[in-house]
Length: 226
Length: 126
Image (cartoon, rainbow over the protein chains, first blue to last red):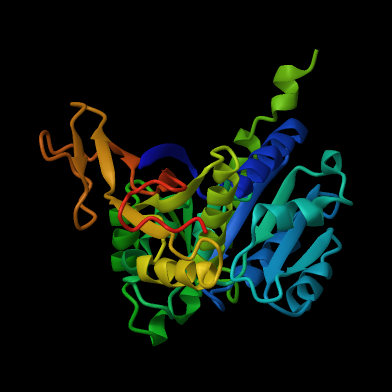
């Protein structure tokens, strides 16, 4: 019996494509963010409020993933930014190849920000690198404050937690401080924002966070240009 | 449920690797899974067995090594296993600790056997 060492990632093919995407995003100065949540936590609503708040000529595009339907893309197209729907046909997450394929006819040099809305699922998307600069996890106050403990992987891997639907707090038994504490148990120092896309509370903080991230993002092109 | 995709990737890797070792067949493939990797072991085993069923790799065994979440203290350098999400350094109580492992999803190694070897349990070459 011989033992052959393998010592590589199981998803090395996905990771290879994701690394290529990341290099392309960096070369063109495109900040790519991957939004992940359970179905119905409000990713699309957050994107609607975001696109609405951005200046009309902003260099922003959105890829939105679902198992079926173009519904989300149709909601987001109203804001006149490039939007493309990725329908996975059953797959419960986006992978790097899907992103590569759907970016094929967009010019990255025309973009500064790419927002990816993953398929609604708190588990599987956490395993697939899409070449993003950061993952953002959205958790709505109708879900349960122990979700970060039940689904630690995605909270562990995300830079930011957006607690959504905070307008419902008076009507649901959701302890928002306990939720934040649980998230920070899994991911010490995690950034946390509280927003309502309905009454727009907290959206300013979210737009500030996004603005800061965009400002801090250094395209490699400036360093490598001769 | 993305374990089917993971199982397929493991099997693909085995087939690719076996191309480099003519005259042998694979007995066992071992993967390393971090406890923060969001992989369900039972689902992975189920999917793996389903995709090798009635193929030339039907006898291939899947081994799973689970890796705990480990942190390193930035102040005193102590490395420790994080239990119950308590990432405080057990030595100096600092909260400034960084994760060094626990989200692995890695192919560790493959055990291969030469065709015609006399090992008990080896598959017949006929």
